[in-house]
Image (cartoon, rainbow, N blue to C red; front, side, top):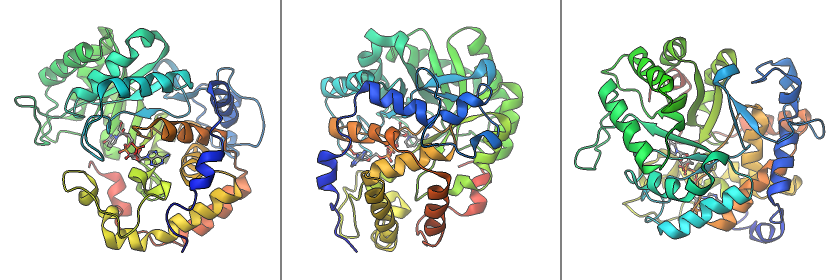
Length: 389
Ligand SMILES: NC(=O)c1ccc[n+]([C@@H]2O[C@H](COP(=O)([O-])OP(=O)(O)OC[C@H]3O[C@@H](n4cnc5c(N)ncnc54)[C@H](OP(=O)(O)O)[C@@H]3O)[C@@H](O)[C@H]2O)c1
């Protein structure tokens, strides 16, 4: 096994020069199959070469989540803004610095920003709102509701009562300094409230112009269908990465069938796919790391062959491990839009370089064969893909 950090030299040299034009151009190439298909492009035949080495692309290089009047154009990669304030992987960062990072992302061509009232709580939305206010009409802001807050804190209890959803959206509009939320996701399903009632409330908010599109996160297949029947769902935001592939067991197919875009959260597995950790890594007890099964020392040790495989393929593709991992996600479907989270400019630039990667169908198949041979520890069971989390 090669030691962690083995790609440091590449990080400094490879594709760090990508600028806004390269990023958008790459998005266009990656979306090559999409242009040949109807809006939303949910035709399996057209997607056989979802990431062709060359070909026509959308003029503005964006990807499309959702179908028809419920579709949303976004950059091929978004920016996850959770760890800027939430203590998940690092202490909260300075608002001014994160504002600069968010605006740099805009300058580099990112148009899709992900936050939630739960992050902070509330402070991530404040950071995003302040940073994006001057460019509000150029970007898509996604946020999430569905947790209960008392005295500004949440113990993780869910609350999707219609009145609570309305209150959440009003709070978001204030914090995000806007008059509409482009994409409002239900963060987690509340078992006490029928999903049709949640979808119905969002439908009313859409009629009122306060929300433009509806999303779900980690909902069961049954709830996705029920919600979609009331208010078409534009995007499903679920965990998906080279480590956590549970949603390859039916969820991605369901999105394809219904015309719902897929937004992978945790696409670089909290930094693991950057070759950043091994079994000796020490994590703060206040962070999320120790609570995640695949970040336990025995799982990190067990899962190192995956990093070895990613590094080998990254070398072959002249990419860094993170770029390879994100590029692989982009290559799965033209309507997949990962939202890697970062608090560092050089990581942001590196991550966006993933949009320059191209795979042939043969490469994807060869990589998949090797990937399937690795027994990953600490991930969800196949069956759990069907259920609410
Ligand atoms: N719907 C949901 O339930 C849900 C759950 C979790 C997250 N999310 C959303 O998804 C977004 C992404 O997920 P995530 O932040 O949990 O996980 P992630 O994107 O897989 O990983 C983020 C972590 O990876 C590190 N990282 C990113 N790029 C890197 C690079 N090039 N090299 C080395 N390290 C790198 C970051 O550290 P640095 O800051 O040092 O770059 C950060 O600690 C979040 O921001 C949030 O918006 C949604």
